Amino acid sequence: MSKSRFVFDKFAKFLEEGLVNYKDFSDEVVNILRSKKEEIILKMNLVSKDEIDILNKRIEKLEKKIAEKKIKKKTKRAKK
Image (cartoon, rainbow, N blue to C red; front, side, top):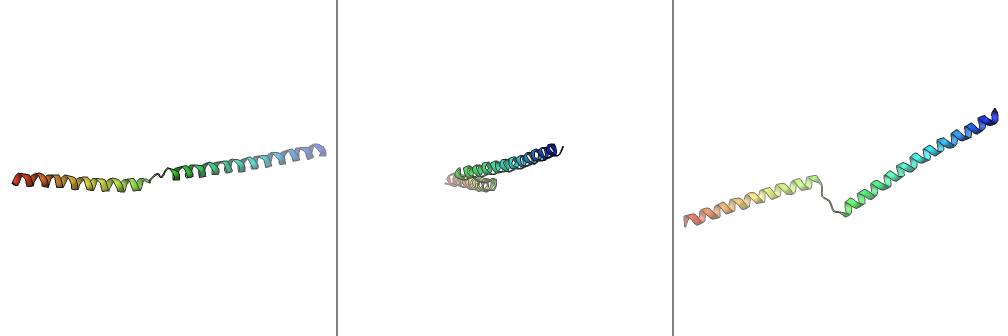
């Protein structure tokens, strides 16, 4: 009985260590994949949503100014 208990304890310890090692290994793989993803994103020079919103607002303002200048230009021609 003591030998079977000893074998059972060793087997249980082996399984426990294996599961812990597997979890550590899977966490490490996930971390590596995340860092690679971030590297790829940085290489692509992607911009954030905030930057896109700011640029869209600037474009809208410039389009309004262009439209106003076209209207002024048309009215000046009409006066002559």
